Image 1 (cartoon, one colour):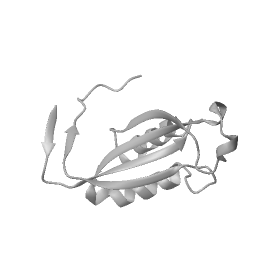
Image 2 (spheres, one colour):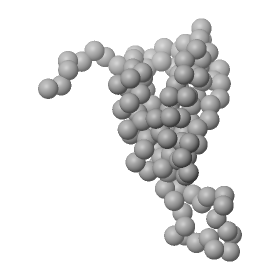
Image 3 (cartoon, rainbow, N blue to C red):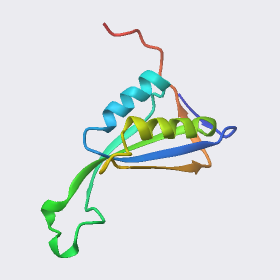
Image 4 (spheres, rainbow, N blue to C red):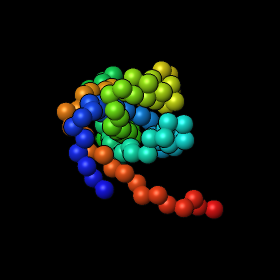
Length: 116
Protein backbone atom coordinates (compact mmCIF):
# COMPACT_ATOMS: atom_id res chain seq x y z
CA UNK A 1 0.00 0.00 0.00
CA UNK A 2 1.37 3.43 -0.87
CA UNK A 3 0.06 6.77 0.24
CA UNK A 4 1.60 10.19 0.00
CA UNK A 5 1.91 11.90 3.36
CA UNK A 6 1.79 15.67 3.05
CA UNK A 7 0.70 16.40 6.61
CA UNK A 8 4.05 15.58 8.27
CA UNK A 9 7.52 16.78 7.44
CA UNK A 10 10.16 14.14 6.92
CA UNK A 11 13.93 14.02 6.92
CA UNK A 12 16.31 11.86 4.94
CA UNK A 13 19.22 10.49 6.98
CA UNK A 14 22.14 9.32 4.83
CA UNK A 15 25.13 7.40 6.18
CA UNK A 16 28.33 6.47 4.37
CA UNK A 17 29.71 3.53 6.32
CA UNK A 18 32.52 0.99 6.15
CA UNK A 19 31.58 -2.35 4.59
CA UNK A 20 29.80 -4.65 7.02
CA UNK A 21 28.29 -2.00 9.30
CA UNK A 22 25.00 -1.01 7.64
CA UNK A 23 23.10 -4.27 7.99
CA UNK A 24 23.66 -4.50 11.74
CA UNK A 25 22.50 -0.86 12.10
CA UNK A 26 19.34 -1.68 10.11
CA UNK A 27 18.66 -4.69 12.35
CA UNK A 28 19.11 -2.57 15.50
CA UNK A 29 16.84 0.16 14.09
CA UNK A 30 14.17 -2.50 13.54
CA UNK A 31 14.60 -4.11 16.97
CA UNK A 32 14.93 -0.97 19.10
CA UNK A 33 13.19 1.81 17.13
CA UNK A 34 10.65 -0.19 15.08
CA UNK A 35 11.95 1.35 11.84
CA UNK A 36 11.35 -1.17 9.08
CA UNK A 37 12.13 0.92 6.01
CA UNK A 38 15.74 1.54 5.11
CA UNK A 39 17.88 1.20 2.02
CA UNK A 40 21.43 -0.17 1.87
CA UNK A 41 23.57 0.06 -1.26
CA UNK A 42 27.27 -0.21 -2.02
CA UNK A 43 29.61 2.37 -3.53
CA UNK A 44 33.31 2.73 -4.32
CA UNK A 45 35.55 5.73 -4.35
CA UNK A 46 38.76 7.42 -3.28
CA UNK A 47 39.19 9.23 0.00
CA UNK A 48 39.97 12.93 0.03
CA UNK A 49 43.24 12.41 1.89
CA UNK A 50 44.79 10.02 -0.64
CA UNK A 51 47.62 11.78 -2.46
CA UNK A 52 46.92 12.30 -6.17
CA UNK A 53 50.30 10.98 -7.37
CA UNK A 54 49.85 7.77 -5.37
CA UNK A 55 46.26 7.05 -6.38
CA UNK A 56 45.61 3.96 -8.41
CA UNK A 57 42.68 1.67 -9.10
CA UNK A 58 43.61 -0.48 -6.11
CA UNK A 59 43.22 2.49 -3.74
CA UNK A 60 39.47 2.58 -4.15
CA UNK A 61 37.57 1.50 -1.10
CA UNK A 62 34.09 0.08 -0.96
CA UNK A 63 31.49 1.66 1.33
CA UNK A 64 27.87 1.03 2.24
CA UNK A 65 25.30 3.79 1.84
CA UNK A 66 22.42 3.63 4.33
CA UNK A 67 19.40 5.87 3.77
CA UNK A 68 16.37 6.19 6.03
CA UNK A 69 13.32 8.47 5.80
CA UNK A 70 11.99 9.42 9.23
CA UNK A 71 9.30 11.80 10.48
CA UNK A 72 10.67 15.23 11.38
CA UNK A 73 9.74 14.86 15.05
CA UNK A 74 11.91 11.70 15.35
CA UNK A 75 14.80 12.81 13.13
CA UNK A 76 17.20 14.13 15.77
CA UNK A 77 16.69 11.08 18.00
CA UNK A 78 17.25 8.62 15.14
CA UNK A 79 20.23 10.61 13.83
CA UNK A 80 21.95 10.42 17.22
CA UNK A 81 21.04 6.75 17.61
CA UNK A 82 22.61 5.90 14.24
CA UNK A 83 25.68 8.01 15.01
CA UNK A 84 26.39 5.95 18.13
CA UNK A 85 25.19 2.57 16.82
CA UNK A 86 27.31 2.78 13.65
CA UNK A 87 30.29 4.07 15.68
CA UNK A 88 30.79 7.00 13.33
CA UNK A 89 32.82 8.78 16.02
CA UNK A 90 35.80 6.42 15.54
CA UNK A 91 38.55 6.98 12.94
CA UNK A 92 37.35 5.98 9.45
CA UNK A 93 33.90 5.31 10.96
CA UNK A 94 32.08 7.03 8.13
CA UNK A 95 29.77 10.00 8.13
CA UNK A 96 26.11 10.80 8.56
CA UNK A 97 24.06 13.77 7.40
CA UNK A 98 20.41 14.74 7.31
CA UNK A 99 18.29 16.90 5.05
CA UNK A 100 14.62 17.87 4.85
CA UNK A 101 12.17 16.32 2.41
CA UNK A 102 9.16 18.11 1.03
CA UNK A 103 7.17 14.90 0.52
CA UNK A 104 7.57 11.27 1.50
CA UNK A 105 5.68 8.14 0.54
CA UNK A 106 4.73 5.75 3.32
CA UNK A 107 5.22 2.04 2.72
CA UNK A 108 3.30 -0.22 5.04
CA UNK A 109 4.21 -3.88 5.42
CA UNK A 110 1.37 -6.39 5.68
CA UNK A 111 0.85 -8.26 8.94
CA UNK A 112 2.54 -11.62 8.60
CA UNK A 113 2.78 -14.50 11.06
CA UNK A 114 6.03 -14.75 13.02
CA UNK A 115 8.63 -17.14 11.64
CA UNK A 116 9.74 -20.04 13.78
